[in-house]
Image (cartoon, rainbow, N blue to C red; front, side, top):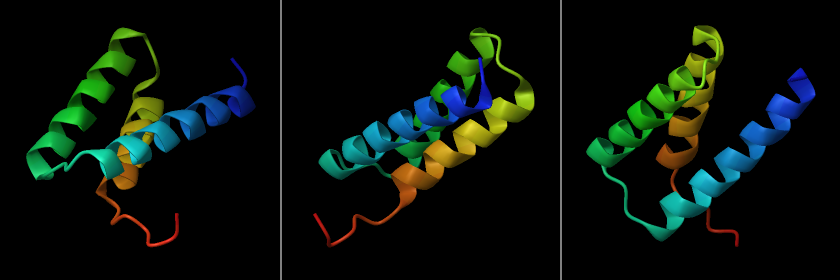
Length: 71
């Protein structure tokens, strides 16, 4: 899979995660659990450890942001 395609997929995942975080109140425990489950799933699918770490960190940044006032 090309880097461009992976980038597009991650953009979609992060957008969905951001929408989910806006709709549901995620405390630190739920964010941590989400990040761990995401990491485990990527590991199970056979992705490279460095990619998994980067993707999980990006996901956690998305769900940890304060909701913007712009909608």
